[in-house]
Every structure is written in structure tokens, then in C-alpha cells.
Image 1 (cartoon, rainbow, N blue to C red):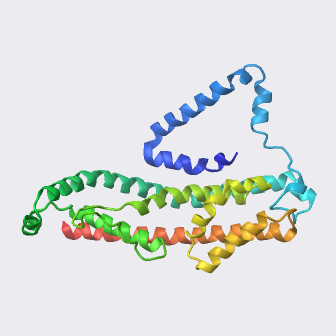
Image 2 (image 1 turned 90 degrees about the vertical axis):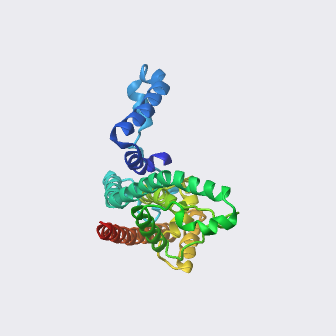
Image 3 (image 1 turned 30 degrees about the vertical axis):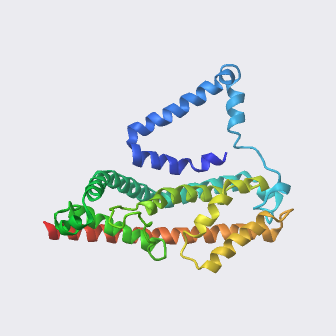
Length: 297
């Protein structure tokens, strides 16, 4: 079940990387595999098989819930309550769809630029390796340069990623030869990772019932999500501590259930605020890049 919570992000990631036709092809492969695996059951008892595979109408026991102990049993088992949670889940996914799509598109562009620049970097490093050190100093002006458009694009995105992280730029890894050329795209992986963890968190926060084993669905992503917010170090640690307390309280209490929802809301709000700031920086970087291109023309 947990893997389905990543499905919205995975679909957008496929579309951004592969396009519509290749995405349909990938999904068709997944569908064919499922049909082949389920063929013995689909051919004999198709209705029962599908009903058991997608039993969305099942009722969870109130005594095992971790996140809704403070609700009465009648409200907890009410179908309208379940539908409202599903609606909230869809609304949150729609609200985050645009920034997630922008993150994925930026990730794809940066990776393509990395592929385009890699041959130039390799060629420069090969030339530097062949030249004696004294000759290199005399021929610095003759070395091959990146185009101005590539330089402006990289500077703009590096600046936006540094501001989005809420900290100072990290120094590039030390090279064996200081004069070697290299561009570090390590930070751009955040553009792909954060949307997946965010979609998973939205699904967990909107679940109609969480049981203790469901903690494994997202505990590994909580530190990353906490550090993707603009909160202070103390607030981040407090969020993680409260979530750990809520999941380790057995049986769950009204306070632990309410506290779990509170931490989820605070965490989602922090990530959303950071996404908005990143989108603004991204738009500013695009305008700066366009202005630089106009000046060069």
C-alpha cells in the first residue's frame, strides 16, 4: 500500500523525464506484469480478486488507530469522514502539483546541461593533464571556455539552490589536482527527492487510520523533510521528537493522536513555505538569465 503514496510524484517524474508516449509505454509494462501475475485469479474469480485487491470500503478497528484516538468510534467509522479525507488528500496533491512539476523540470534540465558540459570538461582536463605546469600558466587564455548562456544558467541555479537550502554554499570536494575543471550537480538531486517524500507525507497525513507498523512508511524521510523547512534547528528536532513520542505511545491517547496531526501539519506547512520561496527564487533566476541573454545579444 505504501508504494501507492509515491505514485503521483512518480507519474510526474516520468512525464518530465520521458514525455507522454514513453510514460504510457512504461505504465503499460507495469500493467502487463500485473495482468500476468493475476491471470490465474482473474480467469477464475475476477470479481472476488479485484474486490479483495482494492478493498477501499473496509473498516479499521478504532482500538488500533494511532492518529484518530480522539475521535468517537461512530465518527471514525463514518463513510463521509473517509471520503472527506480522500478529498483532502487530492486537494493537497493538486496544491503541490505545480511546484513538484517545476522541481522535476528543473532537475531534468540540469541533468541535460551536465551531459552537455561533461565532454567539454573531460576535454579540458585531458588537455591540462598533458600540458606541463609551466606551459599551462602561459596558455590559460587559450583554454576552451563555456558559453556565456551556460555560465549564466549555472550561476543562477546554483544561487537559487543555495538560498533554498537556507544555508551557505558547500565547498566543492577537494580534487587531487586543484586546476582540474568540474561542475558539482549534487544539490540538484534534491529537486527529485523532495517531491517523492512530500507526496508520501501527504498520503500518511491524510490516512483514515495509521497503525503502529505504518511508521516504517515514512520515518526514514522525516529528517530530510524537517531539514527542508525554514525552521530553526530546535524546532526541527522538536518536530522529530514529538513524532517519535506519538508513535511510541501505546496504546495511543487523545494527546498523542492530536500531537501527531499537529506535527504533520507543521511539517507540511514548513515544506510548503520553502517550496514557495524556492519558486520565487527560480522565477527571479529565470528573469536574470533572460536579461543577461538580452545584453549578450
